[in-house]
Image (cartoon, rainbow, N blue to C red; front, top):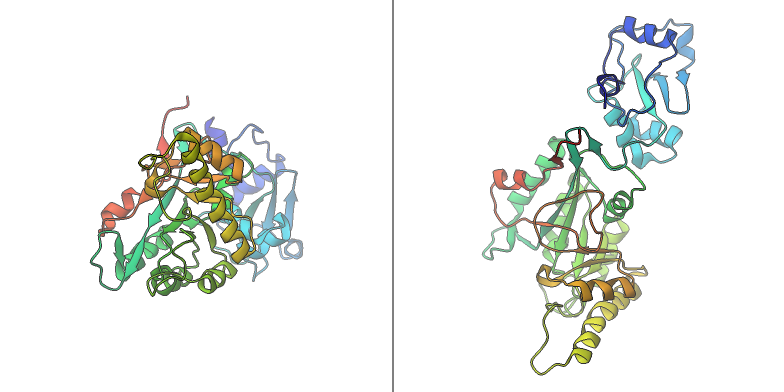
Length: 353
């Protein structure tokens, strides 16, 4: 990518902005990223023209003069047809205040769906949590205060928590994602996901995907209930399968022949999906492998019964070319912020030149 491409929408003074406007904005069409918004350091439009907020429009972008009261969400709803795509406008105008009489760029064409740059490519970390408590005894438990600190770090540093559905679109090269995208998951079906993690996530405007082994739901005080799962789903959370009874799908039982083994594995995958489908009125397409274990035969059955995303616990991030049924996931077990920061890397350096 050339220097001109990289600087396509970088901040300019008002004078340079109007020179570019007079030249018809002859940017290279091969640019892969939209970059940062053009910004006028002084009001560059007369009061007479300020009545027309759209200064320039092409098939690729709009130059828009803020009139006051607009937000990235409202502009995304108006021009992109989806308020959830406000991140497109925010990232194109990074560092630019959304206030009158600022000029911003509204990208109309989705580019760089794979998050590729000359220096590497985007990866999406998936975080894996288990239980939560005010004070933890189990190594699989994260204290509420630590979880709050981690979520605050994501919020303060511009991370955007996306759903597995959005990640699937990225993996299928259908849509680009925010540069700092991360997925949050919680395994086990523990009630602490509802009691402790849920209020904290709501406070920061985040959601997550809960993975439950269906034989455990509602069976004890420590287990989440179907009513709690329905409430969280109504708030934008997703629910996936952790199989029927949380067993290692790659291991045969003593005395079990191949036919019996394959029938049991299929039942673990299919029946758990059917139970979740029935209780939550959905088509369950997300699966977390118990113990993170899978092999090709397990993946084949997952595909047959209708799962479209499968999660291991192999550490690392996921680029757009990752296998959706064998994604990596970072377990959050340590309780220091420095360790957490290493788990949320969203870019893999690799020279593409």
